[in-house]
Image 1 (cartoon, rainbow, N blue to C red):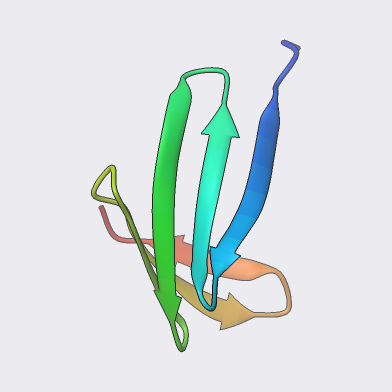
Image 2: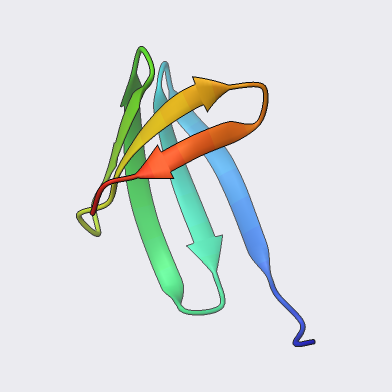
Length: 54
């Protein structure tokens, strides 16, 4: 198993700055949907489950 690094910092209501070993990105959340600057769209399904579309 490899060592993973990930940090997240709140920038405002529903907006986060995410920093990991492969770079930084910004994500915005509205309700159960989250869209990142890398083009990922995620839907939260509840109780720790989510589904990533792209």
